[in-house]
Length: 188
Ligand SMILES: [Zn+2]
Image (cartoon, rainbow, N blue to C red; front, side, top):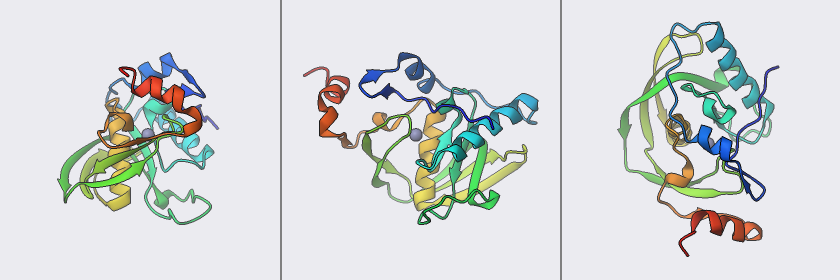
């Protein structure tokens, strides 16, 4: 197995400066056709994703790989145990949203890289995405509702964009209020 640690902007009440730099970077395309190095990087992302049961998606920069690769569950969200069947998750390489449809929908999102925080984020309920699959085949996919939300969240990561950058209400636990206040409202 080649699972990695998931980078977080902070640990407990300490900002991780190196992780911030990585999570804020814009990623490069992964070379197509997928070479040995790319295959290894995809495997690291898949193994890390499956080593955790607390996320519905993961982007390569979250494990320190600045390449455009994301993985996410595409169904079975109501199940207790996550399935690892190949049909139950998607790996997208160099994904690009080519169509957005519907009125923006607000919902709370969390992120493995922003522990303890939730932000209300507006997302499109339907998107079309062009990408390559894990083998480097060209694919075009349509996602709706919750999965569309996950895909938009993961694609944000590839541009260094995080839930904190969205305008919606931000929630964090009272117990850590002093720390988060100092992070998010330093002008006060
Ligand atoms: Zn995230």
